[in-house]
Length: 230
Image (cartoon, rainbow, N blue to C red; front, side, top):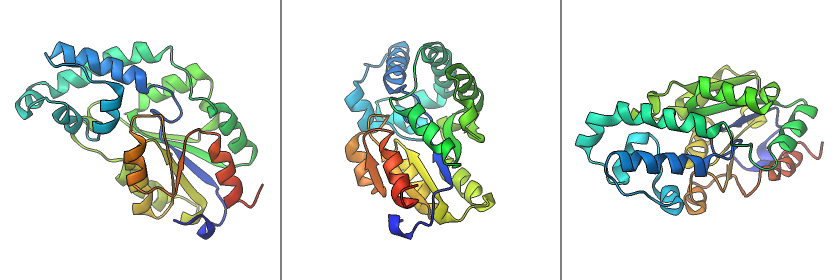
């Protein structure tokens, strides 16, 4: 959606992993342990950003796991991931600029919601730990087994937009993957893709978001453009 069609931003929908929390490197480290457990060679961050996708099963297939392995071990892999990820993430901070952006949004009376493929329980735990729960009116997420088999962020955004009191031109979604851009286009709301998360810049650019940014505070200037400088 071109920026000049928007009326005024009243709702910002944030992805969580790789956007508000700087956990991409931690996730790759966990996946390296999983790969080793199942006898596969580890992958680099560069490769990860080129092949990671949703549902998670497709990522493991792209990384060299067979369909037979995934049929046998999908549940074990998901359980192992969360058992390794949650303790590691307890030391991870928000991405640079996250608090500044969230303070700006709250000061302007703009609502913020998290829409994530991660677990509801995991996100709430980290919001409490990081002291940023107060900035969000809702968290829309999954249980730990859903994302292995299917991706549902687009469907969840459709439901959110349909039930929202805001017009489509008053909403914007921010993510580090093509999935948020695709979901935003599907629902007719503006899209922002941010680099430095789980996906390569090339893949983000190919999805053709309305805005491609490198740091979270860039969103402040985008909102100011939409809201005519407020």
